[in-house]
Image (cartoon, rainbow, N blue to C red; front, side):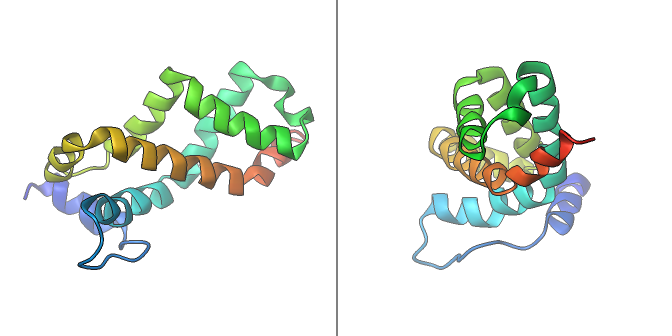
Length: 134
């Protein structure tokens, strides 16, 4: 294992969610690797999304909460460049072996990753409301 891989695994954090022998490979990857990275990178995701809002949808702050939640979901699902940027923030913290595992089933893992990120941003929608008053 390279120095980079050791640094990443030591600083990323423990698995989040249940990981058992009955867990599928996707569930293990999600809970052992993706969830800790999403948690670690949370502050960065918040700032990246604030920047996206300022460049693409300045009237976001006037939306109802329901419309804000819909906007979060739509922009991540439909804006391919933005989605790829978010994936890169996560993939950049994979070890080499994790990346090799990831590419074996990247389509399903990407869906899981983006769904978890959408949920994470939606659960923090109040953070985006505070920006309007700044």
